[in-house]
Length: 68
Image (tube, rainbow, N blue to C red):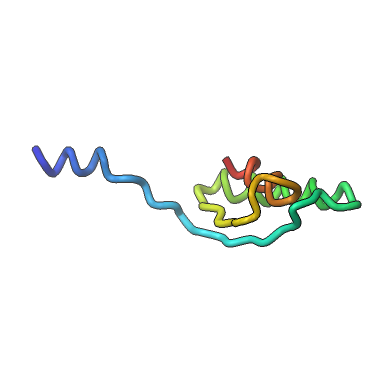
């Protein structure tokens, strides 16, 4: 019975982790924000983990929100 409990409560490991560094502002080109969202979505839909440290501002925030 304990084995079954461990199987259920053990956290899922991400398929992969990617560390990114982006600007804390959206930049001057709208394409940058669009690409940040595409990359974040790609990471999230494939079970990946986004590792970042720039808060939720600018390109970093756009990518983080899209990865959720």
